[in-house]
Image 1 (tube, helix red, strand yellow):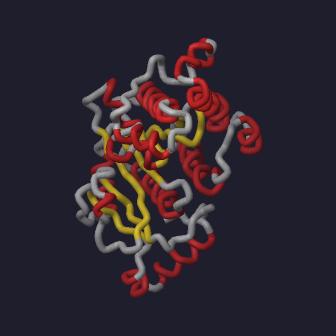
Image 2 (spheres, one colour):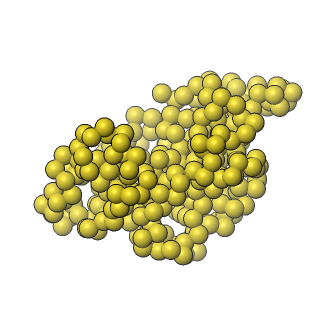
Image 3 (cartoon, one colour):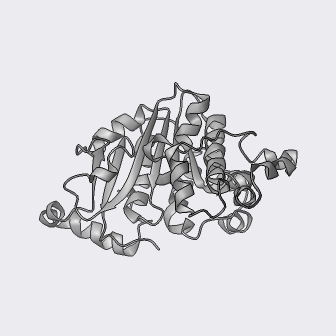
Length: 289
């Protein structure tokens, strides 16, 4: 287990559980369940993941356990399959700079200057990028540049027609798929409390469609594409997965979601069906921000 990138509070917790097995048995940090709520071991889900074409690891962005498991899962899958990594957290127009970093052509400081990195990049996503760099793996920046999602929210989908050919290469081909009856988009409309009208879920759909587009564009039949994204983008097999299915129904897709609960003994009913595997984290666990 590589703990070099783990937050200090989580490091102390994990270290204590390793040197005190009795405590570890009573105070677990997480439990993994199947979609129907049956407890499952990490070893068993690894076997399922390794047989997939595409794996979606849905996270809570500030959840240290999810980030640690992403790191461990990536390393473990690398022992079983050739991997392509990709993430919501880097936008498509930053792909060239990311590639330069992976090849060693620019420094980490230059990467931070050229790429719009998330505030928690160093603690939560840098370890994944470093796996790609150290093992010469592709790392695909799948998300739409935020300014284009903002355009859709403020001015509607038709505003994308004003983009140049170069800019359109950083988004899903137009027109992208959208169905207002897909539950994640219906919920997005209600969460927006009317702000932006239909433009809010359409902006979300643009993100999902763009991530699906770049996953399909870079997926290879003999390799496993491991994608990291906020759980909402893949929960209930909607979002990115729904977008992928509009193009290819035959892909073997396995999804993971992350939830917080006050107890780890059983999966709460409202979390059932979110994904093939649900990581339940004790809601007392400190967050990364």
